[in-house]
Length: 165
Image 1 (tube, rainbow, N blue to C red):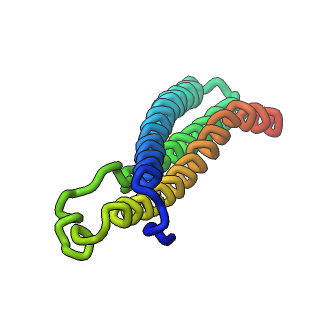
Image 2: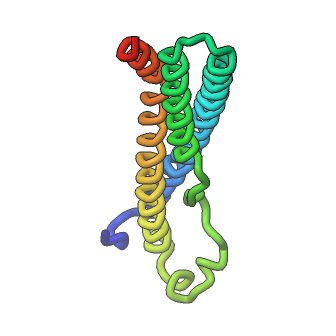
């Protein structure tokens, strides 16, 4: 973009909007991490309980192997769902708003007209926003798939039981 044709007021407004949006991507990422961690904990605890119940049935020699296998199927699904949720919250790089002052020290930046420097920073923000949004899309895909797998676990257990009885 030719920033020399843009007023400084407009360039500052564009930069401000970019900074606001970039900050919003971090807020969304934080919420996504919280949801992922919560579901991973719920699914892991549920899977552990299902394994314990299956083990108790097996040890108790109830003779109901269909129920044991159903519990194992549910536990496997919940563990898989939890793993996908953990993948969603796996640490990844996110760009932050703002800039290091040293990035402005170079003469090629500090000697330019202010509107061009602000415009260049707006372009940098757009690249950072694009990067963060791509990361959010990836992480939300893991969360959605993990949630779907975990929520389907009881149905899989029921279908397993029906198929074995």
